[in-house]
Image (cartoon, rainbow, N blue to C red; front, side, top):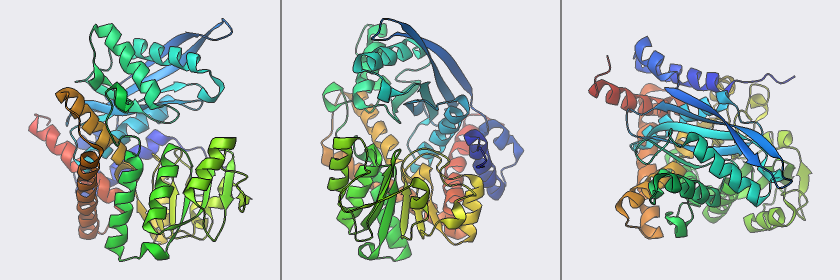
Length: 415
């Protein structure tokens, strides 16, 4: 039986390891190990059959020493408060590692959007904003999309908040459609950021992308962008999966074909010319790069010894448990942590917020150029710490983040 992992405990262990290397002491850890506050709400929604159903929702604030709280809202049947707290703390470190002036937050609603109509989703989205409306705001806490939430849902939420205020408040939410105060480049930002990190990692390790193979777990909004970017780099994608299973072809897969199959059938499974595999089998495939792009806690102490990839680049939030981290590090696997690898999304969310506040919008080329510069600088800073302290890349990324947050706390009068 696979051991159940508490994501918030994992986040605290990762933090503690970095603080110990930095020799910061228990005071900083005691402040940063917990969220500052969280909210649990009940959201009544009239369903299409005329009946009222009450959904449970959450929003957590971790730390705002470096700026307003920032973090996504996910709609998923497995959402729980421990997960939301963990994700909020990871957002603090993600924003800090790339140097953008935000703290960490996260939200979620326990639901299955795949079983809901568009009208039900809109009523739920607006109900969530009514329930947490006093907990968020353009200068306080700026939500964004996450698992199973979309730009359209963000537009509904922004509109509901604006109605509460009596004026347009586009800066309250990021990840909106371009025609509803969104930013060019936001839809592919997380994938583009991960591509930049991959490019810099391969340069750092002096590896030729054209001689490498990749496996992608989770072929959704992020996974398909990553696959396309890998393909353009010359990296051969040999396997991909979603919640219904995986596909494998050692000769390579065309990202466009995978997406066409998923759009037609709802799953990557069944693509002509591929062998069907399970998600468990996918993790043990021989490849150069493994990129988890789905949910947390998928790489554990049970499957870490079977992983044959030389590099792991975390597209998802919290996909690797601390125990698995230790196993992989001892085996010589290079792992780029989520707080660095997938920070492209929140970086362009920051750009969107800045543009909303200025009411001046940038072309896509400018957005992508700014993103590339920030992600490149962040990777090089983490690589420098990794070399100096002889630690794994996750610990190095946490060290870069924690130092910045601790310095902000000190400058603002903490301790």
